[in-house]
Image 1 (cartoon, rainbow, N blue to C red):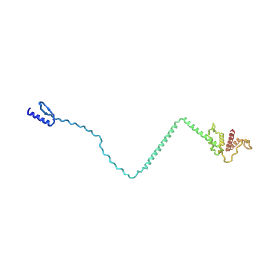
Image 2 (tube, rainbow, N blue to C red; image 1 turned 180 degrees about the horizontal axis):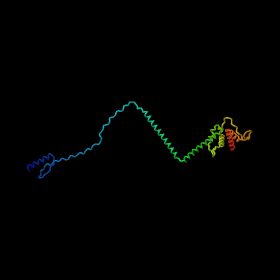
Image 3 (cartoon, helix red, strand yellow; image 1 turned 60 degrees about the vertical axis):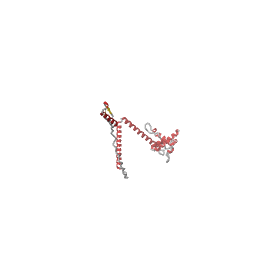
Image 4 (cartoon, one colour; image 1 turned 90 degrees about the horizontal axis):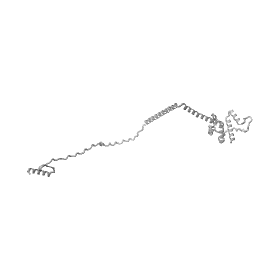
Length: 247
C-alpha cells in the first residue's frame, strides 16, 4: 500500500468515526465520500377558507322612552266619521237588495201563466167569500141573542158556524135561535136580567080577544111592526118549548 492510499484510508476512517456518513465502495478497495442527499420536506395540507360571516358586535341597548304621564286621547271625530260611513254603506246595500227583490217579484209575476193567475184569483175570492159568510153568521147570532146579557158573547158558544150556512149561502136563523135558547137553558146566568121581562107567550091559551092567536102570529106581528127584539125573544121561547117537549 502506498503512502497516498493510506492517507486516504486514514482520512476515510477519521471521517467515518466523526460522522456516520455513508460511503460507496469502488474498485481496488478505495472508498470515496458519496454525495449526501437530503430527504424531501413533506407538504402541509392547505387550510380551508372559512365561510362563517364576520362576527358583529351586539347593538347597544336603547334607553327606555320617558313616561310623560299623558295618555293619547282617541280621535272621536275620526271614529264618528268611520261609523257614519259604514252606516251609509249598509243603508245603500239594503236599498239595493230591496230593489233587486222587487224586480225579481215583477219578473216572477210576468212569467206566470194565465192558468196560475186564474187559480190565485179563485183562491183569493174563495177566502174572501168564507170571511164574508163568517161575518154574516156572527151578525145573525148577535141579532138573535137579544135575550142575552151581552149579545156579543153569543158567537163564542156556537163553535160550528158552517152548519148555519145553507148550500146557497143563506144563513139558517132558525137553527141559530134554537142553539142560543139551548145555551141559555144550560147557562141561565148568560140571560139578561135587567128591567122587566116580556111575558112569555102561552100557546095553550089559544085565541085571545083582540090579539094574535098563537106564538107564530105574535112573531109575524112583531116582525111586521119592526120589533125585532120581541120577534127574536118569541122565537127563542118557542124553540125552548120545542126542545123541552122533545126530551
